[in-house]
Image (cartoon, rainbow, N blue to C red):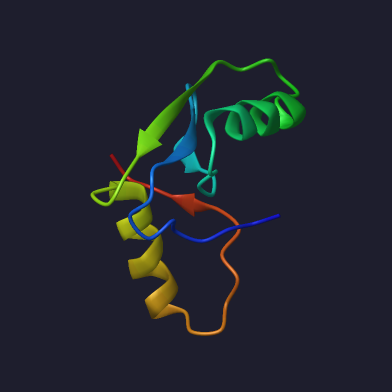
Length: 80
């Protein structure tokens, strides 16, 4: 199930070691880890990062979504 930004609540993002792909927020660390393990075909390493009301990823997600009204965003690529 895809979710949008968590609106300031504590949440978690999967951050892959060899990719700038950023997946949706998860309400628990356990759910983020479970999802990462399910989709990790290459056994790539990843971190699960905690977010809150100042979450950079969610702010970027909201900005992207506002530019694409009515679109469903599955992933958001962030530039470092």
